[in-house]
Image 1 (cartoon, rainbow, N blue to C red):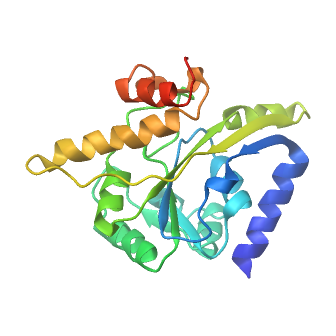
Image 2 (spheres, rainbow, N blue to C red):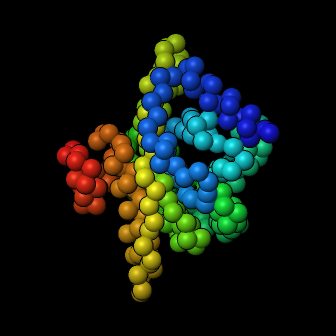
Length: 224
């Protein structure tokens, strides 16, 4: 019940306080398991996504440093979030994510691992690709733009424009024999290029000139 109430509250807040443009909700499967991969611009991203598609079927990782935070800690715990230690391989957090997906639910994460300091995509870590292969589940890419300006815009008593785009579900191919690390890196680039293809050019960052992104844009008729 708390998860449903939290989703309703977040959704109402963003509907009232922002000019929110959401595209591609029809691309989301009616149920899991799948991994939702999203770029990360601000603290507002998590409640924004949770307000759109959250509930007891959705969870994700939150940095361990928020575990004892008087506000964020209880919200993460009550919402079913999984705390993860950044900067190391947190096998407990990985195992919890695997178990969540095996239950047929949705796991949301930012492959970059943290908020972008420039609003543009940074080079991602391989965790999303690793998780997808561990459980053999598909991925849905999603892209947010405008949330990095939300705080300042609200302070000026104006409604910020936010754009959220959900892309089409896809499956990663099997990892090639041999160099598993290189295979995970290649598959991570695939995930990030699919996110980049949903973003305006200024947000594409590290992946702006990636050959795979150019192929994806060409397939959709986008030339920039």
